[in-house]
Amino acid sequence: MSHSVGGVRQAQKQKTRQALLDAALGLLEEQSLSSLGLREVTRVVGIAPTAFYRHFRDLGELGVALVEEALGSLHAMVRAILAEQDAAEERIDRTVAVVERHVREHPAHVRFVARERRGGVRAVRHAIAGELDRFAAEVAEALKSQPVSGGWRDEDVRMLAELYVDRLVTTAGELLDAQEEGDEGAVERVVWRARRQLRLISIGRRHWEEEGA
Amino acid sequence: MSHSVGGVRQAQKQKTRQALLDAALGLLEEQSLSSLGLREVTRVVGIAPTAFYRHFRDLGELGVALVEEALGSLHAMVRAILAEQDAAEERIDRTVAVVERHVREHPAHVRFVARERRGGVRAVRHAIAGELDRFAAEVAEALKSQPVSGGWRDEDVRMLAELYVDRLVTTAGELLDAQEEGDEGAVERVVWRARRQLRLISIGRRHWEEEGA
DNA sequence: GAAGTCAGTGAACAACTGTCCTCTCAAATC
DNA sequence: GATTTGAGAGGACAGTTGTTCACTGACTTC
Image (tube, rainbow over all chains, first blue to last red):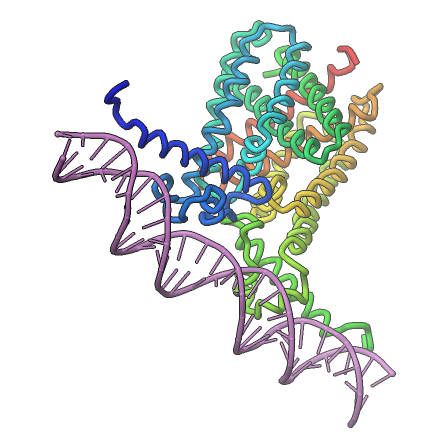
């Protein structure tokens, strides 16, 4: 590794870039992206306001970068769930448990996505929508290869996948609210409800074919 | 109406109060509440910034007032749907149609609720959550009195109601996005998907009892 | 018709915002 | 080892923000 391109320089840059992302994520716990200030972020990081421009054109661009970071970990996680081949019942319990764990480990990411999904910054909304779309496509692919989806039309598999994905994102948001209230009972109630709702959807899925197309 | 309390005075006050709400709602189409400025709002209305305090302590309080206004019309609407006694199939179509119409007639209200439901202002989030809770309770009451919910436990009826309500709010938000892109095809796709998702839930509901409790 | 109430005014405040410009100086290149 | 590059500093800019205070004057009350 003698004369590799970049080197110390790029590493340091990447480091403060990450610091900007972290600082922004922290500040976003109590406000939304469209009210976040550029100076506010740089102040936390400890750099001059103008240095911000070396990394992002504006806060919208930083927001888009946060989307990739936030959805990245979740993506890997859901992929893992989909790979398993449990029975429907255990799969639901396991899925909800994984979501709960994720919310506990990455609360700021979850909050960011839940909040900015319909937030005030167009570019970020689109980035999230796109990411969740790829998400739903992956879920659809997994659902399709399950025996339960025998003669299903592709569009129906897709709408089911989108129902699942949306439910999981919503559940994550609700879990976050419950969890930050410190009310552990509320958390349990959300988990219980999510499980039952997923089960109901799963039952609907099993009987979809017998009822008209 | 000779010496009624208040009179012209209170009427005028109420008028500028409404003007403040309208102005804020308009400005919120392109940003979120936590970035909305007090001066920004009064500038649109055409009054001095300080006059704002005669009506609201801060923008959070105005936000809460907007919640009541926004959910009010929707409330009456859903009540109307619930009162009908159609077959499940037609009821779904009618419900989605009513939601679509509502989004077309009150786009700003829908956007406000969808955005601030998980937005950066705690008081507003709580106000919306409370209102949607009362909503779900009403829906649950209606579902309970339907023959399909024979031996259902109350908590299960409730979780179903919440699933429905959340689905409708989400659909309204998606319809808004599609509709403001001017893409009428996208609107149709959202409608189609919402109908099918509701149908799937409805099927799950009918077969809920035969599967374990 | 006099006295009081109160929605809205307008000036002033300190604090803050995003962006421009020039500068520095350590790392990277040749 | 001289030259180029580019992340970050720091000053300055014109605007904007929320909140304070004393005020006006039309309406309400008695």
